[in-house]
Amino acid sequence: MALPLAPIAGALLRYGAVAAIAYAAANRARPRRLDPETEAAMDQMPEGAAIGHAPGQLNATGRWRRQLRLGPHGPGMEIDLSAIGRFRIRKTA
View (cartoon, rainbow, N blue to C red):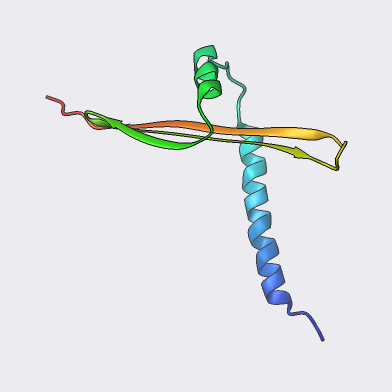
């Protein structure tokens, strides 16, 4: 039984386009200075997602940390994704 090539070609084209965009973005990124206060705030965030509010604003935080290892004694890598967001609306004169 022959494999239909149209769905396979479409998927390869789609993933190839995503990979090309990611590669181009990584090459255009410029190195910048890390702010120690921001790094400390990201490190102190608890794992998980939280949403809160204050008068006139909505705050959200999220953190996801995982360790990946190839085999029981193989090389490992830690992934730490964290984000802080604020949405504020103010009246101006």
